[in-house]
Length: 515
Ligand code: ADP
Image (cartoon, rainbow, N blue to C red; front, side):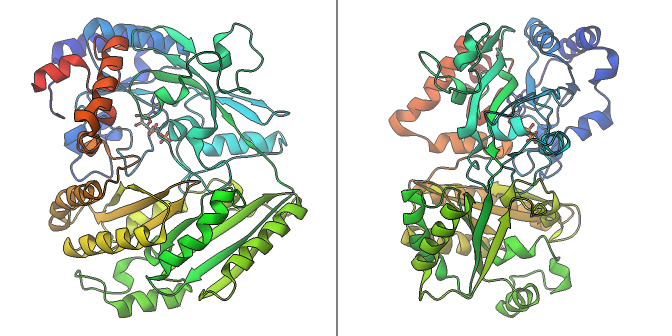
């Protein structure tokens, strides 16, 4: 499905029209441009190589581009900043699509009193952080571990962070969207001309459409409303280290009840030793052997960096009376349990920023994990969702661990505890300069997806290469949901212009070719 040719004459004509719409300087179709917008973490960049890129600076220019694309039937792949590494970066599912790069659109409107922001797609986490700091606005971001992407793109792809605002898609409040035929719509209260509650009340009137534009190809988001956390009076928390792989199960069963009750309001993410180590060291510093990692090596790395086999951070945000009381409840829950080490974290208003994602400060050092194997590194994410039970997490861990071993890869995983679910985020770290290793990655990924499917677990997000594969696992009623998505797609996008293949949703004309 990834290799349908785009008619070269149609592309050339569209590029001519794009140039007159947005200026030649904002249309990129050289070999180096295509490479710049390709997926730098993929085993084979050519499979999803874009045909060109175009970078508008306003909503009107986005609409003009969409109308041109419809005229020439040339597909567009919208990106905000295109840093979605592990899931495809800036690259499209369908080879030859034109990347619609929205990174020049960088307007920020903060409602200081109500704690909301309206961002254009090009606003990065660092941009918004700087804006808040520079203007002395006491609002905090929730940032993903690696924060060099955009606020809007990350929320639209259901990215996550570590504060109590960490479910980014759940904090969206109101969108402005260019529809696939070029029309413009505002969702929620923004549907009323002159509304003063667009970013304040999520439901609007009638059906709500914000989630319809997440992980979808139903429109191009040009403004996104988001709730921000008022700067808390205190942040308190505990960092736990655990000694043994088997500690995962009981630790989850200890934390989850507090999560469900709302004592803990962020999603603690319990990660294995490699999650911590891969950003601080490289494999080569410990062993020259390319085979499975010896437990002795693992122990030596853990000792050097003082990390458990698993570790998890829990954080509370708010007035001191509340966070202190919550800490007591957390300590009581872990009383007499075999924890390897516990460290307390304390921050109060006026202290220098903690400098970490758990206090909403953007960072990019986690990118270093691509260096683990050396060479031109990269990774792919595999992230099934489980019921929040320790025994199921242990079972998931053991099966996945065995598959990592079978395919000769180093286990790198975490379990993020949501209000009612566990998301098991696994990274497959690789060296793109090691062809033998790269040959194993595809089979490994497919084995992981099949393994989760056999347990009835689906993934929350996936790489562009596997969007069809994962969509196929959502098979209730003979893929009834996929058929619904296709009907909506065909109604909104009859020419199949916006992101064909995103989340496994193909417009009619590509489905027909496939058939
Ligand atoms: P980031 O800027 O955080 O790196 P990306 O720009 O890579 O995020 O976007 C992540 C994914 O979300 C993209 O692959 C794209 O499918 C989708 N997306 C991003 N921005 C938009 C947008 N403005 N409208 C519609 N979909 C978008």
